[in-house]
Each structure stands twice: as structure tokens, then as C-alpha cells.
Length: 324
Image (cartoon, rainbow, N blue to C red; front, side, top):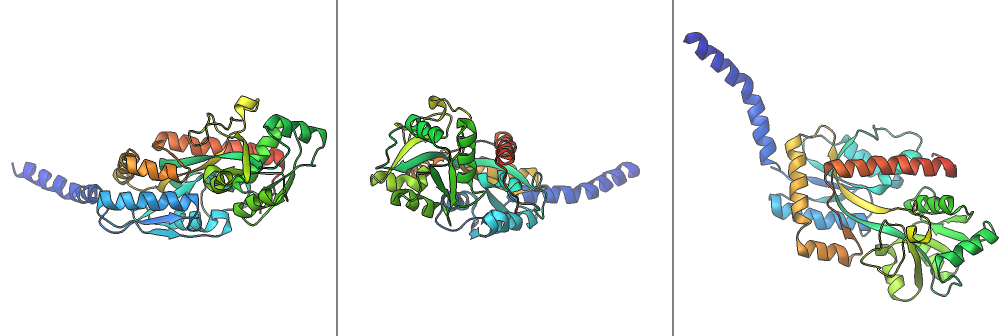
């Protein structure tokens, strides 16, 4: 009897720390949780972060302050998140540029493939090929005919070498077998301004970035890099409809946490975010920004990140991108 009591007492003592840890994870969050955004305030990724941070705060009873850690093409923010403790105290807004980063940067001070646990995709927006509204090109077929007739005579503007629009424009060139002149600017807004001013022939832009100029009649979209037409731009055909099914790409953003974060915390982030994405008001606000609400869970979001990383690697290699 005494031996049985002793064994029970020993088992209880051994289990106590585990039980305490499990209770702490179930109670998460017990303090404010940082939401790290690698980009400046006002952009699409920042808007997504702030909309979701507000919903998480209301649902979970703790503040989720957004911290914009900008610089280095996302390296500063991603690095900050990679160094964060895996105790549920930090959330990263992981965006599509992370899949491109290994192909534009020589050395990164963290394990790119394993640093984070992708949790849930929040929203996305495909790129469109946009031209000046007064352009002679009324559709993509006319554009391609001119590009094939005079290689590198047509130019495109992007937010810089190795930016997301640059990757998508290179994928377009490779799929269409054309050669175009790349003109890098200091940001996507400058590139769109250059299209409007007639300084370059086209740019790759998302609906959130281009909608003001489109609505004002200064830009025209010739094709969209999505698997299906966007409900926000239903008259714009996909590249696939025009014979270029491999031209796919856009911005996307979702939550991730440092690897090693306890599974109950990760699952709570996922279930809470998924519930928020069913809220009609949140969906309306995302759509108003030109964003398509997401919902991919851990498995599918992780698969998207891996497939995009591999796909953009092939594009970068063929294009001869230099790592900085």
C-alpha cells in the first residue's frame, strides 16, 4: 500500500510541470502578443495585419500590437520574428516575399526553410499586367505580337530588382518567350506612376495597388495572374485563358509563429483566425481593400509556401537573378 502511494506521489510530481505547461498553453494569451510586419504601414500586408490583430484582440482578450520592422526587403522583420521566443509572445505576418527571399539574398542568418510554422492564410491578391489607358495595346495578344516583333523594345517597371512584381514579370517573359526591358524603381507606387506617365509600357500590380488608377481611367488591365478571374475584376481574363497557364502570382499574407511554439497555441491562433475569416464584416473590409479572404490552414498554407519557394527558385535561376 505504501509503495503504491509512493509511486502515485512520484508520478504526480513528475506530471505537475507538464500539467502546468499545458494549462498555460490552454490559457494563452496571458499577455500582449506582438504582431511583426516586415513592411511599412499602409501597404496591403500591413492592412491585413491590423484588421486581423483587432479581431484576435477582441476574441482572445489581450492586445495584439502591430510592430512594423522594415528594411532589407523584409529581412529585418523576418529576422526579428526568427529570433523571437517560441512561447507564443510573437506572431509573424508571413507574406509571399518570403518565398522569393532565398533566391535574391546570398546568406540569411536563420534557417529559412524551418524557422517558422505557417498557420493560416489570411488574404491574397493576384498581380495584373497593367498598361496606360491610352496604350495602343487593347489586349494581351496585341502586346505579345509587338514584343515578339521587337525584343526589348517594350519596358516594364517594378518596385526594384527581386521584388514580387519583378518575379512575376520574369515568369511572364519566360512563359511567353519574349524579351522585355526591366526598369526598377524605388517602390511599386513609383512604377505605376511611370506607367501612367508613359515612361514604361507596363507593370505588374495587384488590385489594391492599382485600383485607384484603374477607377480613374488612367490604367487598363490586360490579364490577371490567377487560376480564375477575380470577382473584384471579373472582366479581366486570366493569363491561362490567353494561353499562358503557368503565369501565376500575387501577394498573399498569413500568420506564422517561430518553430517550436507549442501546438496548442498554434492551433488556437488557427481556429481563432479561421473563425474571424467567416465574419461578414471582416470579409467586407478585406474585399474593400481589393483583397480576397483566405482560409488555408496549416497543411495547405505550408504547402503553398514550399511550392512557391520552389517555383520562384526556377524563375530566378532561368532569369539569372544575382543574390545580394
